[in-house]
Image (tube, rainbow, N blue to C red; front, side, top):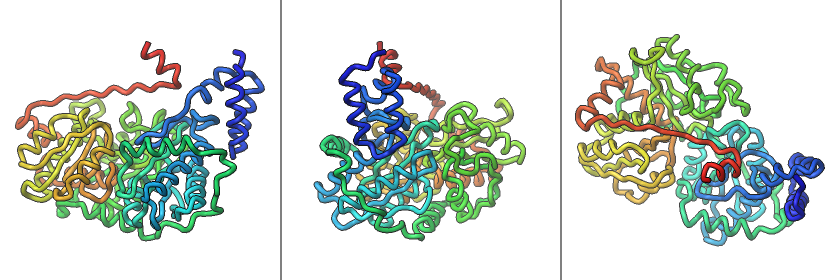
Length: 463
């Protein structure tokens, strides 16, 4: 395919503005071999900054995650914080996962923010997303940037933005930021600080662990055997600390998935919803005669669980996100406070069962658009209510008010407590789900995930 002049010109202009020699070389190679399809895929469209920030495959061009894109996006974020008066004299906080490129992207974000006059503090190493969200509130930051692609494939990376209230941005914040990103000039003109102003205080993780463990509502129930996997992500160290602080015995850990590894070598797709992702965990749980198998996704903001089930293949069954929400919702409504001044929330694509549980217990119920940004803001809109549970069917869950986003680590503690309490009563999670079904009817849900590799695949699917 012959490369059109306008496409070649766009690639050259982007290359000359790119601070990263690796992605500049990628463009040169594509141009040298007249790879029109490769250039079109990278330069024919772009990653759009939305309420979820940015996410996509790493590589050269505006349709990939790269250092040029991160610098440009952060410059737009900085201008928005300054123009809207959100920055004040408060710092921004930057965290990252262990993916390829995350360290460089986080350093670039900190350099741009600090260079723009917004003091920036960073974590010394990798950090789970819920801890970054918690840190925004703990250090009274004006914003938080988390470099992560969560449970996406190894080739991807991403950029997630939290506002100063600790929740993800919502419209019109995204369009306001996007307009400022579009107005950023040559990257060579950006002021870059040599380093961030400082490090996130050492007590932030300690404070998060204590707060997450403090969400326990039945501390007398701890007789439960657990198995755990971090799926090669960054959650294990903090998740195990939360369980320990809450009084649980150390779980058996899937050793080959315990350390952060950006290549995710033991799973085809590091998403616990995907078939096969939890196989090693379930094998370990079965071998150790565990009562509960817990998986966090690579940035630890999601919770997946499996439980013994004699009728399931292999004697174990993974619960759906809606089953987790129903069981945990019913349990927490029984044990987390009393009276009507409480709130549970879910999304329009999740089961309707939580609303029926809310009516049964006489508490407030919110149903929002898809995405935890909306669930968090349902709680922020009602500060007079105690948030018992918010969940979405895609394994996102939050208990209490510690983190204003989904949090797979505190949710793991809460679910382990549920299982321990049921075990003490001679019951199982399935018994609780059956009780809920007898009271409110059987609710069946199913999920289908479709991944499009590039704009061409998406266009063909719509034809």
